[in-house]
Image 1 (spheres, rainbow, N blue to C red):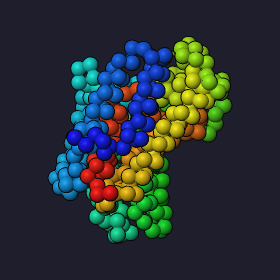
Image 2: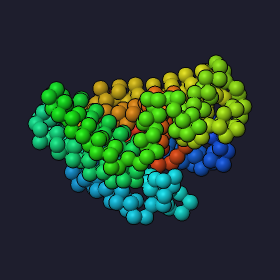
Image 3: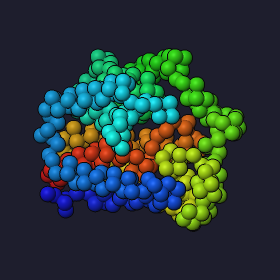
Image 4: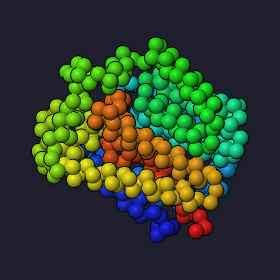
Length: 356
């Protein structure tokens, strides 16, 4: 075991976010406290366990990379047939009292296959063939996610693919072509795939005064919770919006607003600082990595966590549509926590087995 060689600044920031989330759950959803504590314990053990493998020697095996991708593909197909409808979305496979969101595994699969692909092809990524091939890896998984329907996950998957393209030195004309292609795809989704409530949420972003008791209700309550908090907040179990049920999804989509209402600007800055430490430590490990695959794994993790953060905080502040995206290590839920922990463990494995 290489416990001492792990990045404990990174691990400490993760634990801080996890326990801040637990504190919020203890206030707003006490029945979810213990299940989340179990997920956190499993997630942290997963970080330590995966960090003790030299992933460089494993991922050079194409069978491993494609195995994860095909497992994610099969899981998404299975979800389409067996997943129950939860709030209009068929995204979770049930395992007794537990459920797993298969699209989280798809994000990990994309990061792994893109890290392998771009590590080898980044010199020739300007080749249109490579751009279309990488987009195919994205589209085949995204197509299965959009029919769930889960717009938030599709946007994150697109962001992962697009982020890899940008860092890999894509030419401007190819970037413009890619933007045009996906603008056409978005138009198709708007006309034929997006549900009415998803369209309304996007419209509500640009017309914040529209339907204050409907599509903009969540964001309005979130802004009230954050704006009324003050510097030190209202105190544990004293938040009016969350305690009286005005703020929906206080344990997931709007946990930041719920936490800020009770712990104020001080609590919000503490959470944001912890998340900033996570991002900076990942960047630092990526810059110090001794091979392209390790660098791209760090890049994928950075993009994934940043997109989750931007979309979650943005929805709390009314800057992005409310599309059900969690705050990594902070929001309630086991699927995102376990996949995020696995990814962090892999990143730290590149640190443990690197020659500094």
